[in-house]
Image 1 (tube, rainbow over the protein chains, first blue to last red):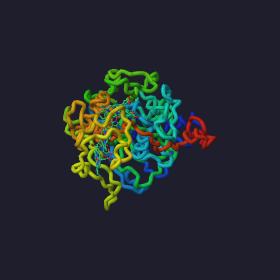
Image 2: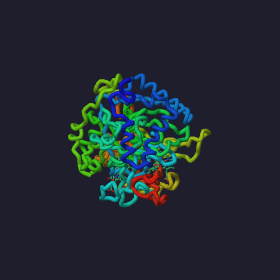
Image 3: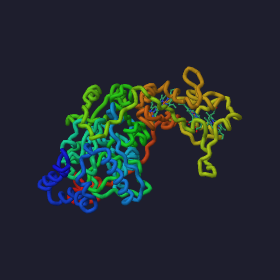
Image 4: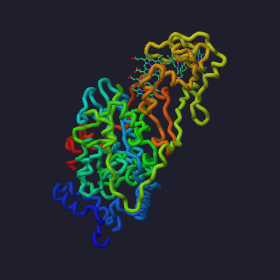
Length: 307
Length: 208
């Protein structure tokens, strides 16, 4: 680690911060640089100078996990277990949603809110449910703010979350490689590496990324203690976050929280490489659509209707 | 939205990304090692009715169908819900043009009757629904209708499927409207609602 103190081969976060400082306004820079400012104050130099996630040895990673657990205890007063869940060989995740049965109840968004330790005040969730006019497919015209009994006449409902694109625009614009696509198809963010520049948020055509304006506030007894390093651990302030298909669950063979919570059975999840899987049956037997296909993002999230 | 072809999706999957330092991939169990079981949830309502009372622990008390019907076996089916005046009041019926006899058996309230006349146990009501709703039953059998809980990967654990009757009241099977939960409260949404006019607009909180 002597020749390059910040990181061995990967992109340099300091350089990136300078560049961003030059292109964004001063106010934006203050926000973007916030995590670094904090690190200087309350974190050890080891952590600032650590390796990129992909280059961490098991020992280094274990140390980081235990340290994050201790920090969570200190800040939120709860014992949590933070684990690194690597991708599994032979698995490519895919997700499909039946728009004919979805009723727009937002139970999926609520399950996500709890499972992924989202900020309680903002009702944040990785899922936005759009109320759409029947016949329209333009997600930009969907309403996320409806507050009446559902399903409403003349409407249908389209939950939108990260599509885990195979050609992900968000990954390409990250100046520091804090977000990348994993072997099983999941696009992840290393919250400890993210500098909060929000380029990825702007690049996502599905509005699937969120920025943590403040540190999430969650009553201690509501914190989900089963946490993944790349998924639902409590995010620091000033970083971007997104849906990971609940990788801390799904990489252990479990179903995503949003699927289990759906009272209509609209969601189908599984391994695209398994020809006997439910998700493959849907792709092969239903008329399947992707959102904004013309952008060439190649999503892993599909919509279908019963015919 | 455009239709996509599944084979493009599956064959176009990304090739491997970079390796990690000294952290090997987790290997999956041998193909076909599906050791988990799939069970279908059996709703209480198939075998008992709520009494409106609770036990000492606050758990609702239910009375089993046989507790009454072992003694009482009417020898004719009613023609409508309105005829039930002694018990089971307040039920409504709105399920196509079906008659009570499309599903119920004269003289035995613990069984149902299929179109060919064979009697089936209450818990097997799904096979009753299946005979008239083939497409939904086919989708259900492939996991594309009716939802599930537990594991997508049956080599990692078990799975529980919902029963048709968990979601559809056999007498009024249409989903009833309900109020949505978790109304979004983030900046962009509040701005669009006009609660923070200064920040209205697309980029949430950009003016901060």
